Length: 376
Image (cartoon, rainbow, N blue to C red; front, top):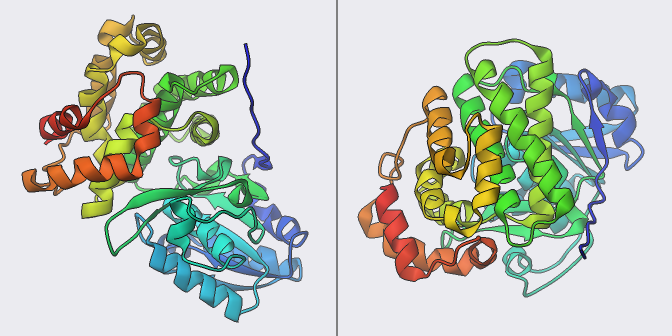
């Protein structure tokens, strides 16, 4: 058995540990750019608390709050220009996956010349970025545990990851208390995204023993705790478990990658700016129904961790979870039109070729078109 595993991430996990951000960030710089969204961290008070923690450690900071869902390459460029003009030397991502991904991209652009799209597409390479501190406020993307930053190019709709060790966080503070204020609808969508990360990494052709262990434990935690939290449980240990599962998912895909569900979703949200988790809900059952034959033993393991028996009821258990999270949807309900499908198929092979190749069953252009149409 031969495999490599390398993930140089510093995880600081535990309730209340966000109050350490000042002392942690001050070891990497003297002025921070806080990257966040428009309102949520301000409304919850977390943004003001973070500023206070930084100031108490004698750190200056400025705020960039222009990031939306499915962050754009142009937004990252604007943030980097702001950081450079303000002479920031450390970047703090405070928010959900879109925020953290944009923060990573900002840190990267600050230290590299050229078009960010060239780095995303592999035409240029660099392992240099400003130090990054990440504080997730949703338990979904796992961006705090990997070297990915998913960005959309608004000029052509390409949604693809910048990938390199330079954007692995210098420190990720995973404090489940920072997540307890998110609306339940967001919890459902991001929780399903985290589950997909774990499932896709587990069935990936390039998975290996370490990612298998991480992925399976993440699936088990989500299967046990996500629905009770959605239904109103305030159990802090459940919040810890879901936070950990999200990070496990991010760590697993850093090495094992994502497979076809994510590969097909990215063109959809790149084109129509749909909610990523809801796009996955529309696609996962459709894709998995035709994928079980590729690795039935692995689908059986997934099923058992979601309360099922074997590979034959795996998709049914996933659908039951979707029902309990009130997430039932289709691509058409998310704004995708039949006339979009041909473009999405071509774009899937353009931006998601790795995910297609990692999937346990080979699908060609016509197969993927058929799956898209079925998900409408």
